[in-house]
Image (cartoon, rainbow over the protein chains, first blue to last red):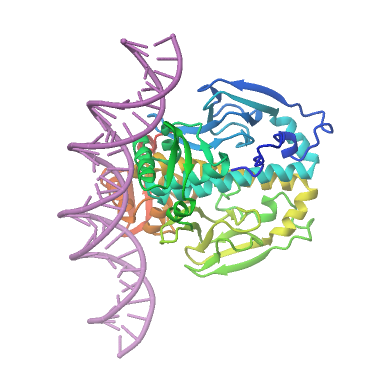
Length: 228
Length: 228
DNA sequence: CGGGGGCTTGAGGCCACTCAACGATAGTGG
DNA sequence: CCACTATCGTTGAGTGGCCTCAAGCCCCCG
């Protein structure tokens, strides 16, 4: 969902400061800290003060909202290279958790805002990232409001294909329940849709690992997606 | 969804330049034009170049996406005072139409960006408006993905209550189909939910006008909404 | 080997959708 | 003034897609 995702697996991950348009050495005000989270642990909670902005160095993150009775809607998955936690005024609007063991870089939000005050390029990049998040949310509204279960799963596969397929295989970090809560479905419905796509030969699994998926017919898949 | 909505009906509508943090006289580069659209006409289409930013002076606007088979998802309603058309990189991501006869002010996007380059306050307001749009979309994802039909209609009523109730009455500009396409439902389901709320005495209609609604028990209504 | 988490699959139920009929209102033209 | 039409909204009957509940398999990890 960010345009700052690293697409060349051989290249070193561009760091967050670069993504914001800052040369690493030239902004001594902005310090880049590293932190790690074990699988399943919370990074920050909804309504907590938004003091930091994060970039995924390794692993994966889910951000979600809860209703009081436990229903969950995942708004986005953050993969290696993605920047998140920027989603705010002054407090976070999602809870975020590490899906697997995850390492992140973080910078103080405040210091970022200070730089943006005087540096128009940084301000532009801030706006650009927010706009990318907005665009993703807008597309997701269409999916959640109007698409069938099969169409949703297909859209998910194509999105993940773009973001994490390496050597023809995509290895999903998230479980079926996460996918379901992202797509507004139940995990059983997701499983059935994947089984159906498997049956008709559109996708394959690597060995017995249900999270390693090969897309065998992207054209056919794209036809099922129904573009706007 | 914008925080720049005029809430005092007696006060003159703050104009768009004020909303962006510009004194009207001090920015001769940015000109403010007026235009009107008849009920049902398109203001701009999805994927058209985004040359202008708009503010509703009177009337109401819907912005939506379509799937190829005609399914429609309305992403937002723009009411008097709201600014829209800012949703973009360089091209619009929604189609917008006047719901009723509508007058708008418009400014060139390009000139706005130029001012933002040098004026940090304008840049901040631009980012703030985009963030407000993002927040609305995020909340709407939760609604579309996880709420029941009754909860959706209740949320809609409370949203509209905040935005257009005057003298205890809200007059909806949009028809049942628009509401349905906003909430990811059918118009029949919306109608049934409203009937149910009417039956149990939570809302009333003014005369036989099904678009003039009085909320009789906001507390009870809020209880049905299920906060996150 | 036992336990638990993750995934699949089946059977049945329910909520929202589909299809249809009908009433009310507004606009149009004779 | 009265058809005539079109639009909008409500309501009912029946269907179907997704959910719920449950069983069972596989794999990992103790």
